[in-house]
Every structure is written in C-alpha cells, then in structure tokens.
Image (cartoon, rainbow, N blue to C red; front, side, top):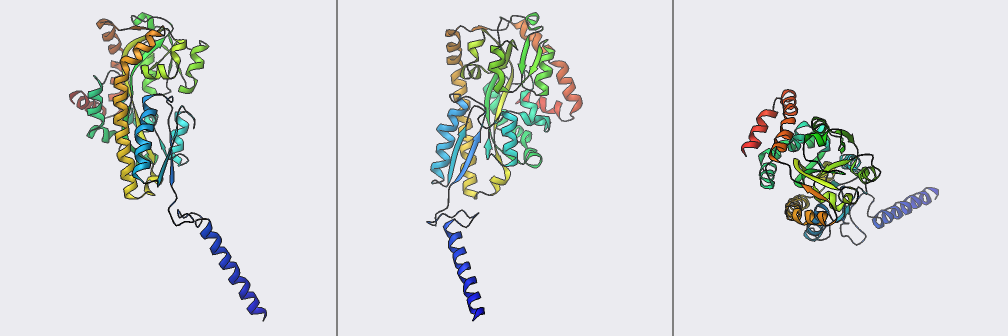
Length: 342
C-alpha cells in the first residue's frame, strides 16, 4: 500500500513537472505555449548619434528587412550613441555574447594588424576606391582572422568617412599643427600620425569628446564631418581643416556562437540585410557631405582646404610610419601596392 502511494506521488510530480515545462517553453526551448517559435532578439550596438547615417541605415534597412524577411522570428533592437558602452565595451560584449551584433570601427587592430590597413594615412583616393577595395578580395583578406581570434563573424563593411581635423583655430600649414592638443582614438596608427603631424595627442573614447572640447581640455579632434554635426561638437569648435588624412570604415559584426545557433535561412537574411544596410549607409554618407558642410558653415564653422604644398607636407610626415609598418609586417608593402593599383 505504501509502495503504491509512493509511486502515485512520483507520478503526480512527473506530470506536474512536464506541464510546468510545457507552459514555460521547456526552459531553453524556443517553443512558446502556442507551439510557435519565440522571436530571437538581436541587440545591435554602435557609437553614432541617432541621426547619423549609420543609425538611419540600421533603422530603415537592417531592422526592417530582418524582421519582415524572418516573419517575426528575429527581432532587432538598436542601441545608438554608446548606450551599451563605448566602442571597446560593446565590441567586447559582442565577443563574449552579451550583445549579439555591433558596428565598431577598427578597434580590434591592436590584436589583428591587418584590420588596421584601411586606416593607413592618405591611402584612399575617394569613396569609389574605398568600396572597390573593401567589398572585394582585399576586404575578405583583412577580416579573415576575426572569427578564429575574436569569435566574431564579419558581415559587411560600412563607412564612417574621410577624417578631418576640427579645432578652435584656423589651420593653414604645418606650423599651425605644432602643439595642437588633438583628441584621437587610442589606436597606434592614429597616435603615430598625430605625433608625426606635430600635434599633442590626447587619446580618449568618443563618448568623452564633447566635454573635453567644451572644457578646452583639448583644442580639436579628427572625425568625418557627419560625426562633427550629429554629435554637436560644432557648438564648441570654430574650424575644420579638410585634410581627408585618413578613411575610417565600420564593420557589421555578429557573435559567432549566436550566428551558429541560427538557421541557414536566418543567417542568409541577416547577412543580406547587413550588406544592403551598409551599402545604403555609404550612399547616405556620400550624399550628406555637402549638406553637412553647409549646415556647419551656417552655424559658424569655417572650412579650410589645404594648399597643394600643405597636403604634400602632411603626406610626407606619414612616410616614416609606412616604413615602420612595412618593417614590422612582411605582408604590408605588397598589400599597400595592391590597394594603390585597385
């Protein structure tokens, strides 16, 4: 009798447990109580302002395409303006899987030297040159170590733009750059170029730039003018030198473990949406240049186009940097020639 009572209790517990698990979707199961798969949420982090072309492309192309094409199986949440941390923090978040996707710059180049190539000084002629290089075999070669080394899968190259120096004074020659307290990202190539130009380099995250400019901790910074406008830095800067000394790309990336957990169809949707959104962002950024310039001028910012001599002087300062790069990396000089010939 006691044995039958015991078996009855065990049976009741088993039935109750199975009902509980079914009601909860079976713990790690993706089945909802109605038998339909729950939507997987993709958090996408980046450091650009809400109105920047990067964020607009995410909202208007990537999010829309992914959610519609997946029939609601995938949900996209966009976190702009360093909401999930500065660039290093959200990049590390994608690496460890706490954030599914991100659009960093080339912060990973300290570990993966080839990822620093697109930001070599005075390398690209124009946007078409950039797209031809990054969207072809060279772009694939540059990103080939990201999965094995950092656990992130590259999806598409997008654009930050050609970098220029904004400052609180007019810069017309090399002498005007001497001693300029210049904020730069904490990336070796940037710092070396800034020092070669004669500036006093102050590395800091992008999230701290406005306050540093406002409080005159630094005299200037370098970024594409879309960032100067959308981040509001023009309120505390008077001048822009159209140096175009470096091109900064961005990269759509996704955590590799999360990627591997998707179906082939879902992977294709995300990859296609990434490429289309990145191409759209390139288009928006190219079109916005004159509009951004006009806006900044109307708000009191003076633009200075460097003379031919000034441009050659700046380019000359980068020569020792290239020699050092070629010496440290046996692949670098050949890659440099391939990019120039593209």
